[in-house]
Length: 415
Ligand code: RNT
Ligand code: ZN
Image: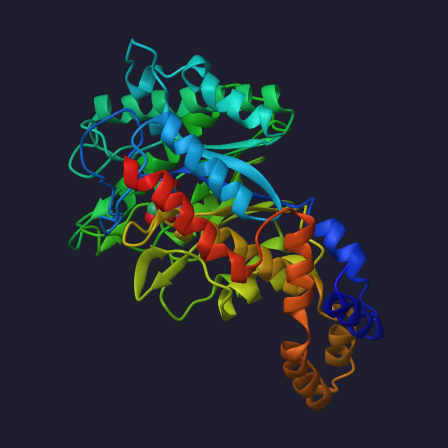
């Protein structure tokens, strides 16, 4: 224990915060680490471009091109990050040994290697059907397509993913969050806004008619306001996803903080949803002017998101997953700084005198609240963070770059 941590511990104790308890607790809170930062959302089941209105920009060296490379990179990222990780896989990351099957025919066996990977590392797994980057996306539409054959194909994919999700949960002993997101929409003003939404609704209902144990599989619907080439209208808008989840028992709303108008904040939406839903899910990202999916930083909104989860005692009601993909810088750096930043945000939230601050609000002592809230920003948070990294065998912030640089020279540059 360093002198600096010792001194920080005493300062926090005076505010009624037990740093030891906080460090122990934080190390048990799972955050989903997405596999797709490692290869720019490419996956292993196709050669085509990334579609669906999302884009990874940049061409930094060292992109993972095989399951082995992606898993090795993920291992490196996990070694660089303190905290409990859950694995987040997309259906397009199926691993085929010889025979290839299309997405409507995927089976648990195509994900056996991911299960082995997760089990060996004591991780649960989250899953995502992949409704993009595929020739059967017809005119930009999948589950909301007016073409029955297209719609059927994608429903079959969704059902296959439910079965795979249940397999993940059974194998790992941890519930699997299965997130439904499609890029369905129109570039310009549609003539019919409701038709596609009705079809989308019915398609998701058909997917969820696949039998599954609600304690093992947690289906979610992720909303979005717009995508590239889908600027005028998205089928799965915020109201659509929220209403769908509210009306279907066992279905969760998923909010991605890159999917709203730029002045809207997801932090404020979290307590609103927690007032109604037993459980909700998040994609944590960093949008810059649009849904750009930059790596997460320890910035104001990330801190606010973590605060809303922690101070509402909702760590076990909110499924937290990262979702970004920056290909313009070392991917291991983007991946790990994002995970570490969210860990920092959670730690910061857990180190705040939340109960005292709430009390000031309820007593309408708003001047004191104003002053004390601002004062929390200069508490010796960094000393507790360093101690956390040390205990979790992860590098401190000062040591992080050298480790990334070494891996780049020894592994990534040789690819
Ligand atoms: C796209 C959504 C979606 C994807 C991943 C890859 O805007 O955020 O969650 O990023 O499924
Ligand atoms: Zn997302």
